[in-house]
Image (cartoon, rainbow, N blue to C red; front, side, top):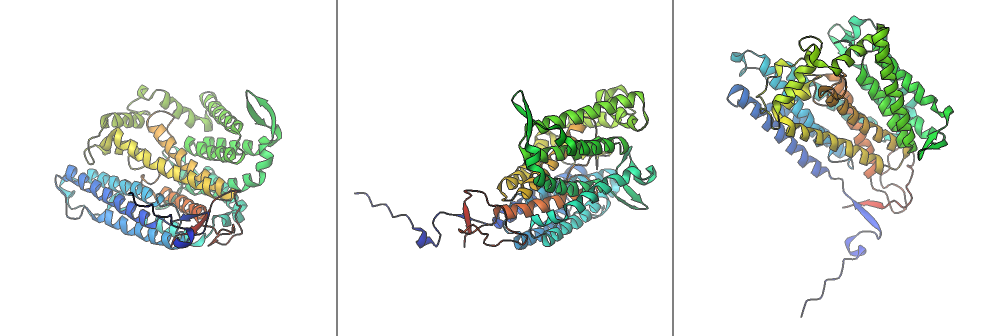
Amino acid sequence: MTAAAAPAASPASTGEQPGVRLARSRRNAELSLLLLAMVLVAAYAATVEANVLDTVTPDFWIPAAALGLVFLGLHLVIRWLAPFADPALLPAVALLNGIGVGFLRRYDLANAAPEQRESLAIFAGTGGRQLAWTLGAVILAAALLAIMRDHRSLSRYAYTLGLAGIVLVMIPAVLPGRFSEVNGAKLWIRLGGFQIQPGEFAKLALLTFFAYYLVRKREVLSLASRRVLGIDFPRGRDLGPVLVVWLISILVLVFEKDLGTSLLYFGMFVVTLYIATERVSWLLIGLILFFGGAYLAYVLGSTVGGPFANFYDRAQIWLDPFAEPYDRGYQLVQGLLTLGTGGLFGAGPGGGQPTLLPEVQTDFIFAGIGEEIGLFGLSALLVVYLLIVERGLRAALAVRDSFGKLLAGGLAFTLGLQVFVIVGGISKLIPLTGQTTPFLSAGGSSLMANWLLIAVLLRVSDGARRPVTGGGGPAARPSGGPPEQLHGAPTEVIRP
């Protein structure tokens, strides 16, 4: 005889309510992944020293430990203030940030005299400064989580943030070149020893405004006037907002001499517009406007010159960098040779020659790392970026209010677009843009702005995953008004 099957546990016996999905905070999973990320960073640092110094110093673990303490502090803040935030975001970003600090430390060792390398202080040079910037950026992200208990509170300041974003974008354009120009692009505010790239913060402010504006205007912008080849196109009078943002992006391209920032601003607006309306026609219109504007700038640069000349020169270098391999095309040529030298598996951490590549610590850090970890290693880094973008989009899909959906979707896409612009530039897919690689490149502005971006995604994902009671109201609703409930959405409770 066979034993009778044990009766299924009833909801009453388990303390659960019928028809209720259980939710976990997943903070322990986040901690485990974070520890794994720091082990990988420490292993990277040890391998660098083994290849550069032919030995591993007793202090190799200190940068990874310092980073681990910083990220552990943020983990505790998340555990307290955003317990249901996505558990994969912090470890993924921590891994990228740690690899960036490790490579910058490797760059410092390459620049030091051979007899001074073993005695080079852990917190000296570019790597040491990046450690300090990481501490400041993580503190800023934690402060934002503490202040912004509900992502919907940002909508109250949408117009203020929009105005601030426009001002931040335009300041470098109107400043004299000695206060704003670096390597031909006017993206900085430089006063004495202080410098900041305001455009990194402007993208966050502008995206918040875009999300709020498109939530309010979504129904109007979704209206179609005619159908062409199965695609519904909007009415002509609804093109105003897109044309305004297009004009701003062209002005950035011309007066700040930066294709990457121009593409970033216009791209994030058009994609946010697509998310809001679900109209493919907006994507087509956006592509036509941007590429048409870029081509017009190229033609004017070849004929008129003036403010269009810089973009024309960049396009010429992109079309044939080997025409002047020791002059204008030197940086791109060196980047392509560096990637080619790395091959599939690379020379190993510490085995490359990063000093031969101009601006390897900022614009071309992806190529410098690629020489040492090869195509497979770079693919792994891109997968980590893809994971961050995917988790951001997942938060956008799961959050219950329209503003949160547009905000998280736009932020995730913006990060993905920035990575595409950088990788496309160094691989000659598109013209060089001068953008920094998020979390890898040296620099405080980019690091702080991108950690703020992650903090907003953490807050949105916390709101998306936060359990709600069977009656439809949140079990632990943050302030800011009731969220929009999705019809038929499953109800959650906290598992004891």
